Length: 176
Image: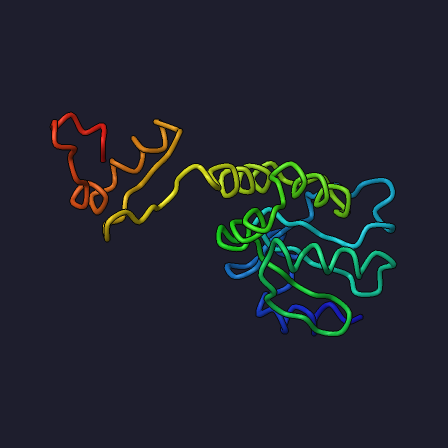
């Protein structure tokens, strides 16, 4: 496995130890601490949302199926696949029944390193609001419904939502 070829495939410049930092296009993940049994785990979960899957791992098939459900593929050469977590991929994951805690638990179980806290936060932020708002069609008009007042307040801060808001006949705003 040639790291230089892999880095060219990704369009990423290699870490230059003589300089002591990554160049402007590269990333330095040398601070990620490996778990004691890292050789038995197939994933590298990086703080920038990129996930690398070793195709030669005995857990490849399970990890592959999981990653397809939660992340978008970026590059899949023979030995190492790259995926990226996005809000859309995580939304799709929860829309098919995966829960936030399950995503975090499985990623942690398959990862060679401890999950970066930024990634944990990103996954929580991208998945915890799923299902809190419904767009309902009634008498040829769309209405937003939610049992969570804080979510409705957040939506009403958006200028597009404010302009589309329809006040109830009483004018109290509670029927929007």
